[in-house]
Image (cartoon, helix red, strand yellow):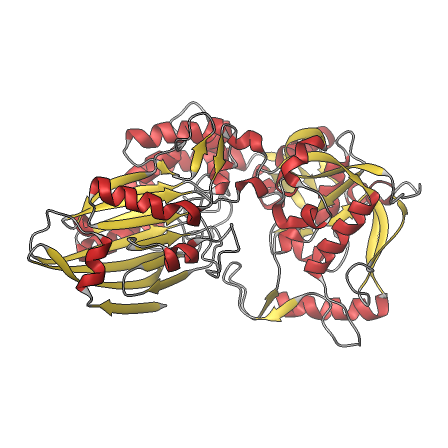
Length: 581
């Protein structure tokens, strides 16, 4: 992927402001960025011999650019989601809390200049991200989050910007957090602050920094998806910033895991995707005459990172940390007596989701539960379970909430969930799953993919119900009883277990059920620790995961797509389109 655009309009560029000390001549700044690395620090997956893309490989790629362009001319930044997603970050977040955290040491070694704070970094809680920030500050590369505003004094919780000198240019790097945190995470994780929309404040911030610091280049790192640029999605504001904000040379974004670059006459945008699959790469060239910038040109592309080309010195230096994580995560924690495959959850009840329902319904005072497949195509084979496998079974640090819902709200919730998942079938041969023929940049899946995101495909545990694929939304769900055979009352009130992400408004399912998630605390009757920890405690108590236990219909109930003669063959065919035979 490569885009270029050359501009020669001195008048417009002067309006954007330029440094007051530039000498006449030409300047070239190289910009490199990563984002949504999600803990892919080591090039090993801890088990077996598979090599994966990692920060070790990213460092090799970065250094190749530094050698070619001169290290003094290269700006390196990250757009957030650094502290969640892998065994290594879990270990240094929650297990070894006495040693210096590994993340700041990696960032220092790799020579990062600035980092934006991501929503999954917030997910780790104050104890983790405050500790990491203290260690990052010592090395001069703090988290940046101008729009994470303290409630007590109105100032930013983390620094708003950082000044960097590269390529003979003064560069102001501004950082922004995803504005939609409330819809992802419980407030206790970000207590003492709130998050303002990026597009609503960034112009004023840029104008202020340009007046005060008189930078030659301005870079905005936003942990927000690229988006459509229509101003309607608080999750994805990067294109809004790219289209509207004046005085920014680079918009660097993330969050949506979709690689994308674009260069225009006065700005360029970089999104490297996720998990060190690509290094986003750009160049800014300036020509200065009589103290004024008379020409700017931008280039932007993506450099594929090769898993096996790594910085071997970096690998050797951090080998003790790798071995500590490996030893911890390979500990045996129990026995799995059934294969768990998330793909099975798309066409009906599956051991994977049955397990999650069983865990949730085992927490008092839960009567019902909502759960979805949390990896697109995860798989854990039956056999000895190690702690490492728990990250595949439950990859996120979601807490468990139990909230009150009426029967009517539960029905509306399920109608909304299945509407993301399936479409109405009017004749044989039509798709049941809501899929389209396209490649998915997030999953790297080529061919067919879901229209929606599968982690929002919630089914219910504790109920007996059917989903009619021939009916429209609002008429699909038919509940026969609770799992124990007692009547389900649409006018009744039930205690429903769900993730903190869902309870905070994630996926908008509660909103479509008619529930105001800004007032969710009034409905919460219990909060529990991270669901992965509940799974670990279950294994410590029971020793094994057995299919007859986790699929007990008297506990989790039953559900299926009907009519079976129509739905069954179509679902099987759709699954083959997604994953092959």
